[in-house]
Length: 71
Image 1 (cartoon, one colour):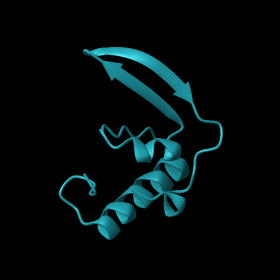
Image 2 (cartoon, one colour; image 1 turned 45 degrees about the vertical axis):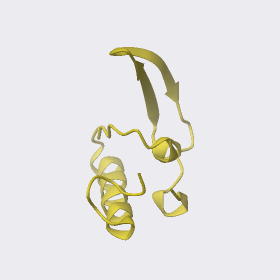
Image 3 (cartoon, rainbow, N blue to C red; image 1 turned 180 degrees about the vertical axis):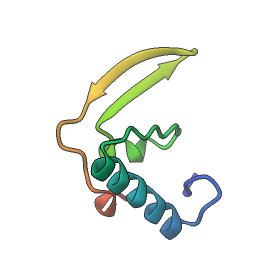
Image 4 (spheres, rainbow, N blue to C red; image 1 turned 90 degrees about the vertical axis):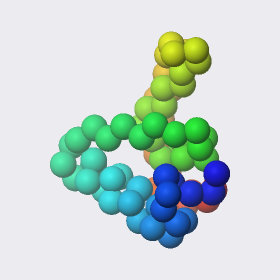
């Protein structure tokens, strides 16, 4: 899948940027559930599920700005 939900690529990146900036600026938690593993570098924490159970939790000390992520 090349899109975020039903959004085109550019709009999808704009929405992710807004979410990333808002989460940091407002000290909020944003949860994104996706099959698109290309987005994981932007996350502070990645929780991988398998068969309905959390299989692993990875902490990302240096999340990548959404502007630098391509999918």
